[in-house]
Length: 378
Image (cartoon, rainbow, N blue to C red; front, side, top):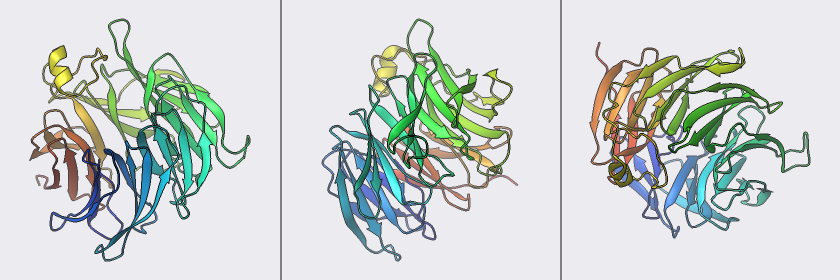
């Protein structure tokens, strides 16, 4: 996995199945630090948004570690290791200001921790299955968290005691019987996008659901993808007070789609644009298994399956990559492919942009991190 670049420094962090996290110089293409200590694969990394150089790593060993990269990027120190789960971690994220962070786990729980002290603030219990992700409300300073679970629900938790006792669930977001594999707040925090999936031969669906974060009621639902939705990315150039915001999604069906996320009119919605230029053919089941897709999943995975998507910070471009090993740049408004950056030796799992939208970083199953110059035609 790839973390965002440290503010003011051209560095990037990655986590690996070898149990290490690494910090890289983008200018030199060199590894600056190898962060050891986990006894299992590192499944997630996250930079503190305050630009302090604090990095989180979350591992399948059930622990998260807090690291401090100094201002010169020449030293990196382990500050604390936090342990509160009984199974592998699935995700880690900071609140808007970096004061607290959340971990989610296969044990069905989420935990909220104080960044400075490493103390456990809340243990969030209530899901009946693996918790895949946790995200903080973007506008209320870490006072609420939304979690996504394989138990077919997403839950909104009050962390400050504004509505219920602190640490209690205030909304259970559920519509249909699909597993919830991803969740994101809209940039203004008024709504929550829930990503659900129900693979199989009988009425499968892969759906986006839009809920009110205030009332917990469903507003709209969006069908269109024919396989698991693997990535979400908001257009960052749109103002937070805009009623309609644009969301880019990637999917195992090999398509890149844009959606206008608006609460009205209520009912079903449709995608705004679709790119299936590099979709390719549908893979056979044995080919899907070789690609790392769960054997129990029956879905139409294409050879051009997209596994990640990311808007550029200026909102003009979208980068998408996946199973065919290519990293491609698309126009953010038309989805025209503007640049094929090049190839990895295996599928591409994560993407990150530099702050000035001139560089893209990709992480692949070939054990490589690559940095690409975005050089668009005049």
